[in-house]
Length: 109
Image (tube, rainbow, N blue to C red; front, side, top):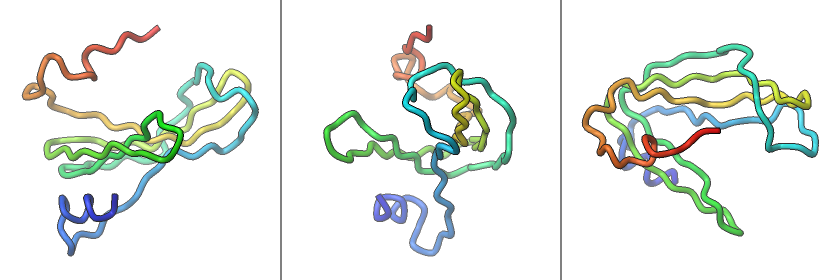
């Protein structure tokens, strides 16, 4: 992951690693969450994002995005009181993405 990121951003780049953190944990992790506040906002013209994949061991899908992006650190509260500090990325221009991109086809309940 570090080699991929360094290869994309360059060996001399100074970058930050951001991750979602559970501030409180109780047994129910799958639940509805309510947005409480934005704790940080950053512009990210070049970024690398890595997503965990559903395997029985640690596997990550990493990709890069070179366009206008905003990265937010947000605080969420779960229905059972769990608090999470999550990372959210807004891609400000998706006009060059394929209409079949997974981001456009997901159905939300």
